[in-house]
Image (tube, rainbow, N blue to C red; front, side):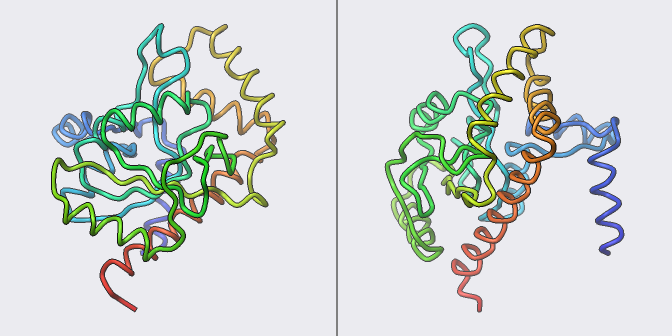
Length: 239
């Protein structure tokens, strides 16, 4: 089983034929037999359909920088606005417009709580510098929020649990800011837009930080998976 899982992961990471699948791409992929790796929107859609109440990811998609010019916004946001699921993440990718993304989440009615922090995480960074309105400190408190939402009823929407990467594992903030600025300049010079922006910037960050951004990413994912598992166990009453 583990060998099969490893082979699948290696294929997702290295096979150029594996597509990026948001929730809008699932039907065409299913109909044509295409293989792909799901985005947050695709994962949230499938998880909710399967009855999964909590899942973990690295960072959410969001509002892109220079949105006023190109109106580039991740499909994650609208999908989360109509899907009743709890998502544990390390904030949104720091390549995005974090303040605009938080404003968009508020407009869409998506609840955001910081886990042990009063600031929204910055994916590779423990803090984006942007405050959150609510803070929880344990899996039990997260479950209380989930149950309160269920008791209130109303339109289905996601609960975002923003779990910062530990400061010991975060990317050096000064290095992050310098490399990101250089990568954004390179992106504009090459005319990269749309879905090509995120993978280009993330690749540039990995290369120009000597792999340090990847290590921070992995640390964030491990922390998010651990927390999501604790929330799920607490919610089901398992020991």
